[in-house]
Amino acid sequence: MRLATVQTAGGLRAAVWCRTASDELWIDLSEASRVLRLGSLETSLRAILAQEGPGLATPRQIVAELKGESLPDEISSWPVNGARLAPPIPDPGVLIDFYAFEEHVRRARGRRGLDIVPEWFEYPVYYRSNQRALLGNGATVFFPAGEQLMDYELELAAVLGAPIESPSAEEAEAAIAGYCLFNDWSARGIQAEVMKVGLGPAKGKDFGSSLGPHLVTPDELGPLAELRLQARINGETWSENTPGAMAWSWGEMLAFAGDGVRFEAGDIFGSGTVGGGCGLEQDRFLSEGDTVELDGGPALGVLTGTVGQRSTQSSDPGRVG
Image (cartoon, one colour):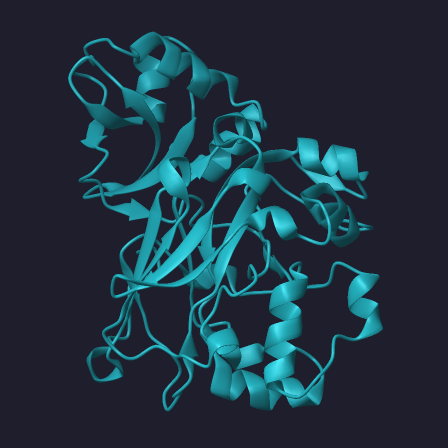
């Protein structure tokens, strides 16, 4: 099952993908639950996850009842290929990014003349990013002023469908509602400088992250190790790899992050960059106007973002895409 947050003239609406009698559509979940008398779903996907849990029984029932059928007039819908999508979860309580791929760590640190520290092999480390700077599919990202080493990162993200607190790895994995593509835009110049302090990426990361284009449940996505992720810059392939090479499982990473900490439904966790999944590893960087596409295959879709020209940046660059 695929879920999305659609931007409409009236605001953001949670939607589910369905092949009806006429077309492939994003169907308004709140309206569909009411019209089909399946209860009362909220209008935001984060709230629906809190209502439903990772099983998402009501959205599944909506798809089952509307598949191949004519859509009732009372239910709003949007063409799959024409809808404007916000991040699937535009308002997470937490945005965490792990550092789980040895190939990326080794190559990125090697560019700075550094080896992998032994502790990397012991702990699935992470940092907390800016959950208020999420961008949806097709959005423009504006890097910090003066940054010359503008970069993308090819990642997968997991979204929780239930609260966890000090979970086992098995409990944490079972709480995942779905996955989507994640582009952790990176300002490598300022990042390299501030990380000399030894604390974190600071202004190298907190200006924007792209998420989407939609959320895919684990049953539809299949084995993660079989996925092929690709990054294209202006149509040219720069990166291609699999998320199956993580040093830890999703359950292990979430259990580490959740030790003594409570996370809620809708919280987002990035995998870290797949091997070769950024320009830094190749000594290639982005320019203003570049279009970056992260491609996760038929189910995950393509997440697109454009590097903005800072001379045209407004005070409100449209954080939800």
